[in-house]
Structures are given as C-alpha cells and as structure tokens.
Picture (cartoon, rainbow, N blue to C red):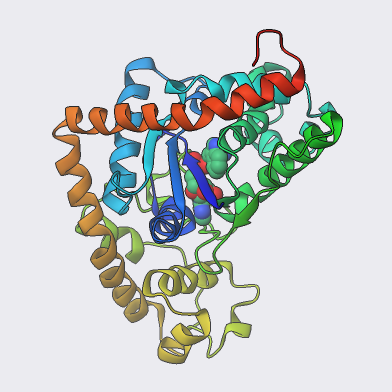
Length: 333
Ligand code: TYM
C-alpha cells in the first residue's frame, strides 16, 4: 500500500520554494495516496529556537499547509514532537546509520559551517530523525524539493541496512517525488543561492505571508542580467537569475520553461517581471489571506494538530511494536 510522508521545519516564514518544491505537490497527492504531513519541530531545535517563537511558528507552519490546500479531512496533519515514535525510532537508526554516511551529508556541512565542533549533535544526526519520520509509518513516497534528495538516499540506506542486519523486510525502500519545475527555487537576490528561510535578506524570498504589494516589489527588484530573455531554454544556460525567474513562472503557470519562452522569449525583463508578479500574486495572495484568517484562531489549528497527532500515533504504534520485537528489546510483543 502506498503512503506519503513529508514535512517542513517551523524555523521561519514559509516561502515560494517550500510551496513550489513541496506543498503544492503534497496537495495533489492527497487525491491518490494516504498522506501524512508533519511540522517537524524536533528538527527545528537542532539549532536554537526561542521557545515562545517556536510554538507560534509551529502553528503558522500548520496554517501554511492548510492554506496551500492540505485538507485535514483527507490527510493527517500534526507536529512531530507529539508522536514519541519519531524520537524513539531515530535512536534506533542512530545505531544503524554509520558515521561515514552522516559525514557525507552536504546540508550538515552547509549548516554547521566552519565551526563544526560547536554544532549540536542533533544537527549531525538530523537525517536519522528524518528517516525515522518516514519509516515510523512505513511510508513509501516522499514529495520534497531537490535539496532533500541526499537525505532520502540516506533513508533508503538505513532501511536497507536495517532489513539486512535483522534479516526481515521491515521497512520499504522509499521513493522520492521531485517535480520537474520548482524543485529548486533560487534566491531573488542571487541565482546561485537557494531560496531559504534562513537568508538574512527578506528580499531574497517571497514569503507565503507577503501581501500583493510586497510580492510585486520583490519581483520588480529581483536580480537579473542585462540581456533580454532568451528565445529558447538552451539560452538559459549560464544565466542563473533568468533561469530562476523563468522557472518560477513555469512552475506557477504549470508550463514548461520552453512554453514560457515561446511566449516571452526576446522580451526585456521589465514587462516579463510585471506578468510574473501578476501571476505570483494571483497564486499566493489567496494563500496569505487564508493564513491570516487561520492565525486569528489558534484554537482551530491546535484542534487539527491534536487530532492529527492521535491518528499518526495510532499508525506508528504497530510499526514500533514490530521494530522493538525485531531488534530484541525486552517487553515487546
Ligand atoms: P525544509 O523545512 O527546509 O523545507 C520544506 C520543503 O520545502 C522544500 N524546499 C524547496 N524546494 C524548492 N526550492 C527551494 N528553495 C526550497 N526550499 C525548501 C524542501 O525540499 C522540503 O521538501 N529536512 C526537511 C524536513 C523534513 C522532512 C522529513 C521532509 C523532516 N523530516 C521527512 C520529508 C520527509 C527540511 O528541512 O525541509
């Protein structure tokens, strides 16, 4: 049976990259799969989070999922720390994964920076917790942006080693679902950097909470090169900013980059950006409106998360019983 699991960290404002790389695909998958969508607050605390802010951002992340179209009637929506199976299975996976595997993780290298000795141990074993998130439900498919691909390969390696070590097919080998357009949205200020919650420049990203004026302003100010748009997709090579804006357009309009350039190729950036801003506002303004509506009543969000946590815990329970028995933890049935 196919089951989808995915999540995002409540560490700042959700942005266009999260939407195009992940959330909009989560919404589509609800029609065909049993879906579990998680706000990964335990992952968030691998770097310092102000406690009161973390609570607010966890609610805001849940509001973003719902505003983007995640339907709590169809899918399970909850925050990670409510289901203890995640942390428990992560510990078992800490004992399955090898130090050498984690040493290869590029996200750890990026996030820890030069001063690796000062990074939290949690940041280092972050991918083991991610594997636990997915495998505590024996999920088979994981919709993510390009940047999570390496972590999902680690999840596959952990599942394979676990099954092999214990001689039982306990865990499925997960398939990433990565969309062609929008899988890697870049910063609006620098076409070589990923659009990210942690970029100190707010102008580098379109936040899902930005209003129409801010969206239009940020797109107008987005970095470009001096040439007009190329006539075809081949002309985007070595033009990271042009490539990013055309890619964003394509993803928002559900077109290929070739289709976008068939319409806009040869134009100057100014008129293209105007069209792109209209398109972005049309797609994002309803999301930001719905998020503010939801955030006015946190009790409603909390109730959704309570219910989701209960359902998620019920799905993880038999998996954890099986895992404990297979590993040889006394008391397991
Ligand atoms: P996070 O919180 O960084 O991002 C959430 C989702 O958004 C995607 N994404 C992007 N896609 C395209 N362009 C971008 N610039 C961009 N930035 C972010 C991410 O790929 C992701 O799909 N480790 C994960 C959270 C996680 C998880 C999981 C995901 C924890 N457990 C289990 C899947 C399954 C993370 O930090 O995502």
